[in-house]
Image 1: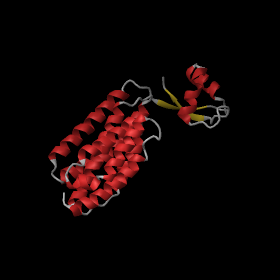
Image 2: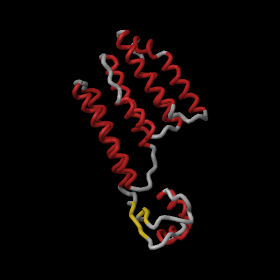
Image 3: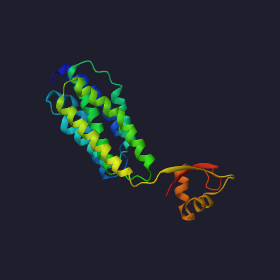
Length: 222
């Protein structure tokens, strides 16, 4: 890559990796490895770009960040920041687009290991991934980058199929309404015939005080 392009691309990578490192948990060996990899890549970004060797280090940064415990929402925030970039040179544009694809691939790897408790959770993830993939696929198509386009379509299809199959056996979330303010123990008994699920009711509805629950909320259908 030419120095002018590499200089602009290095600035984009630096901003992206600054956001990425913020998603890494502060403790643990995996977090330490991720921070080291990200720091090394930021420090050597310009040289790696000029040598056309930036791909593997970026891949490692995202993979280690995922292993360290970053969340899907955090990776999405990194992708959203990349969408705000407006590169001028061809090299910087290619790097921005490739970085977006790293985010989508990392999101796919995260979704593959996620545990869901209701269909609504699955639908929310599936819906949230639609537009990012559509945008990335459109960019690849406009650039006549058939390999990237096909890879994005296959990844998008694989994620969608996985989520559809995951949602199939899950219960739905239903709305409930009681006449009085009740504690979570009573709610759990009335909803599930099991007071031991009080914490589940509290978490599902983000109840502030377990003794004073709102009269409306959500519960699993089974």
